[in-house]
Amino acid sequence: MASHLIQGRTVGMPVRVRDAEVCSAFYPVRADAARAVLAYSGLDVAEVLPGKAVCVLLFVDYRDGDLDAYHEFGMAFLVRPPGVPGSTRLGDLRRAGLFVHWLPVDRPFTLEAGRSLWGFPKELADIELRLGSPYKRCILRKDGRLVLDLLIKPGTSVPGVTTMAPPAAYTHLEGVTRRVPWSVRARGARIRPSGALIRLGNHPIAKELSELGLPKRAMFTSTVSHAELTFGEAEEA
Image (cartoon, rainbow, N blue to C red; front, top):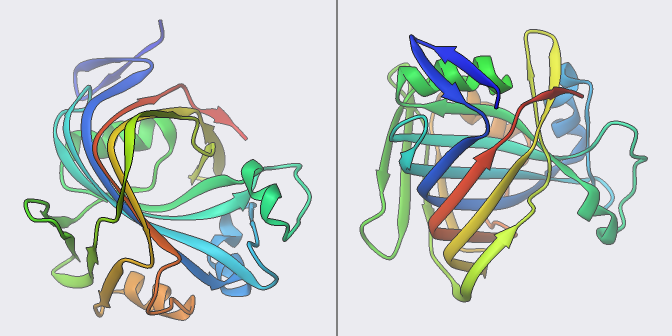
C-alpha cells in the first residue's frame, strides 16, 4: 500500500473518510464564462444544454477521517474528460468529470495533504457551518471578506444505503492536471429541485460566481447526513 509523509505523519492510500455530512447545490451557468474560468486547466466544460454548463457548490463537515476533522467548501464544474468529444445530449453527461476549481478548508494539515497528494486547490478560509437545523447553511469568508452565504433546504428522502460511483474528479495545480479516483457510500440522502438560497459577498471568488451568470434558482440540491468517502492515488490526466 502506498503511503506519503505529511507534516511528519504517514498517510496511507487510499485515504478514507468514515463519516461526513455533505450538502451541494447544482447551478446552470454560462458555458462561455465557465470556459474562461477553466482555461488554465486544459479541460472543457460539459454542456447540459447549448450554451449552459453546470457549477457545483458544496460544503462538507468531515467528522472522522484519515485527515482528521475539518470543514470544506468546494466550487467545481462538470467537464468533458480528456479525449471525450463535446456534446449537449443529457445522456452523455454520465461520462462527465468533476473539475475542482477552488477548495478552501479550515485546517492546515488537510490543506497540505490535499495539495500534495492530489493537487486539490486548497486554501485556508473561515468556514462556518450551521447543520443542526433542517436547513443547512455555510458562511464562507476568505481574508476577512465574505465570499458567500449559502442555505440549502433538504428535500425528499432517498431510502437505504447508496453506494455511488461519482464522476471522476479532476484537479490542476502547478501546471499539472490530475485525475483523482474516489467513491462514496451515502446514508440519509435527500434531494429536491431548486432548494438553495445564496448571497454573494465582495470577495474576488464572489465576483467570479456573479460573472458566470449564477441564477437565483439552483437546478437541484442534495444533502447526505452520513457519507463514507475513499480517495485513491492521483494520476496525471
